[in-house]
Length: 423
Image 1 (cartoon, rainbow, N blue to C red):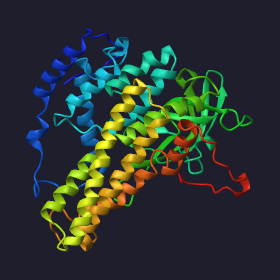
Image 2 (cartoon, helix red, strand yellow):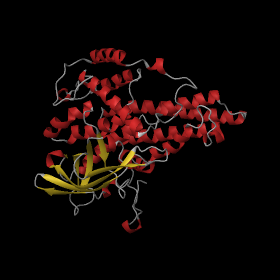
Image 3 (cartoon, one colour):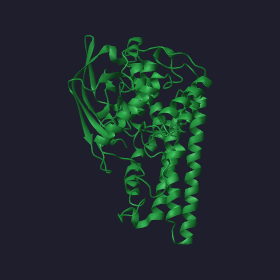
Image 4 (cartoon, one colour):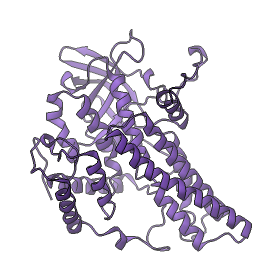
């Protein structure tokens, strides 16, 4: 369809109406209307949460990248981005209206591109030097470069400022050593947004710096982490004397925490809008399940109906709240985005509980009946979303302290504090 770009190119400027019209023409040529491809009960794969093999994941990822490249080449990939990097320079509201248009068509799933587009590229755009932006920003937006997030560590998950990965200055470069964990799409990525400690003597929030590293650099090792679902979506990444040019630093030395807090707002927004178990889709599947396999006990059926109604109401509230936050923030995600992640988790919890009450033992024992045992994978997958991107408890702390202005949570003495994991 298109070729990798070597440098940013300025595309013709379009008005919002022209962008919507051009987008509609593009989607009609390259995709089918979503309404025409919606599967019915008993048709196709009955997976609720798609968890393919790494080989199939790579195939789907490549299709998504190719589609994104075509969209970029038409000037339709970054509606509210600066024209000098391939954007249209329109408002965030215009970008959201374009997104609404895309939802009308069955385009390739873009879940493997979310970290690149919602976390890595915004961090570079906001905090990167002009040299770095000129080098990578357009390629990130076109998805010629795929990025991952190298934040969490075995002993620095929820306590992210406690990272131990070290970056030591060596002339015009830095030498990085350490370990990262729970790295989504690390095995697919070309670059990684890395948080490292550059001043071990400074306060833990003050001694951090952000870098953009090459994932194929000598000393970088990516290993899969097998999950309960049988898939290996996450990775652990080992860094052994990795040389990173200072030109790949994102933000000032010692300002890594400021870059991190801005980036995490985008992460929470990305998780809240993730295509992994989209809340509205999961609720629709539960409704189908109830219609085709209703509980025999009228009392149970009535209770499940109410539970599904709650899940549906919460899912619609999530959509409306997302739109309201985006309009109010003008595209700059803040701490209030934690609400989206909490809402998403609540929707999925209600939906899964309803599915369990409908199916009973059929959720745990494979009878071969379409649309039943497939819920097991969702059952063991969805709880992990309460941890990924920061636990529910962390999200509530963020809302209490940074949105509502409540006093900070009392901290236990370091000697009494548990370590390890992301909980």
